[in-house]
Image (cartoon, rainbow, N blue to C red; front, top):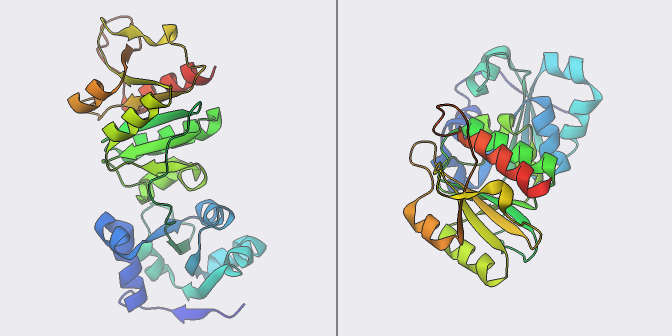
Length: 261
């Protein structure tokens, strides 16, 4: 494998890649994102993302051998970087020294399909919540994750929290979540917003057999009023004790379990 060596943190390629790590605006302007870590980088390859560049330390090459070669075989360019450069790119405490710069997939806004099951995140901001929801959606066989506003799906923390699920499962970026809900209503599916309201319908009483689209709200404000009006049902997860609400990722997990059990 022919590696091009980069030893300076001020190298233009490194400075540009570091911008993509830290800035959602930069990522979407270029339609590029950065994955860090052997597993995520391999997930990007296996999930059909075009790999522009691989950045890897000599230590990682020696440690991971053939797995690095596999990523390198799918990259347009391969760079051998120093530990100092690794720290410039890293978003983790103990970096493995493996990074890829990949192209976003240009799928546009995919339609929702009748009879399928979706979970929509309405302006969920925390990357850990986004990642956990995606990971659960994949594990439980949810047909698609809908993201409306909030955290960028290519946020490095969200990608790590999802354990690569955000690269593997169908993700619909909804510019207008209400329109998507109305479309699913017309197709005969159940649409519901989760709310911490004791007077709302108990989620365990809902029938998901004809397909369903569930909305999980923002960490601080919950589901927006417009979205609640568009959904056909307001549903709640009954709670005991003095708890008034659930963390967004916990609500998403319980909701998906009810939809698929």
